[in-house]
Image (cartoon, rainbow, N blue to C red):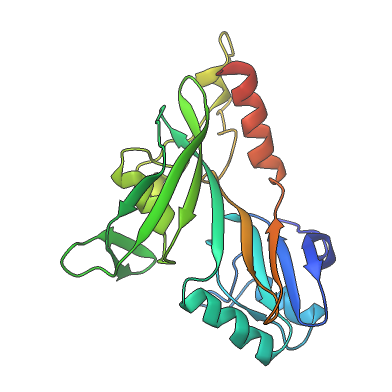
Length: 239
């Protein structure tokens, strides 16, 4: 997959910090094998001392904070550690679900190999707040506000409510096909229909934090093309 220039992702920049709109299918950091392109490598080409302050899953798009020097990295990292950063994600989930300030407080256990599970006995505390934004016939657009920052937290907390993220097959989510929402839509006999969105439908929409000791700012990341297209099709054929 070909990605645009790093500069095209930048939402905000000053002498200390970068906020970028991470595209899907690009890891935040080096994978275990150390190979392949990722946001950290791109950032270091742009600013040699760049450090990623938090991470998003490879398939998750949206707002990502990058420090340009060690002092700023410490400032932002401490805010994440002390839960001072406000994060807002948007997800499209299977089914119609009415969430009104739903607090999910379920401990998460990291099983290794990029897998997690709910474990009240052995898991670490994890809390997410959910609010439904828009309802379709078969899907719901949901706002997700993670208070903690566990791996796959939003994904598994939604799955625990039987509200899996569309396309998140690891946690029981089903992909969305045009034939499933558009009446009379057919594909050719020998053709294989692909999902409208070729990943799970999760986007880091907004982030609020102190860019320095005195200045708090909020940054919003526009939907990428695939997320925007899916919403347009749901509005057209599933509303």
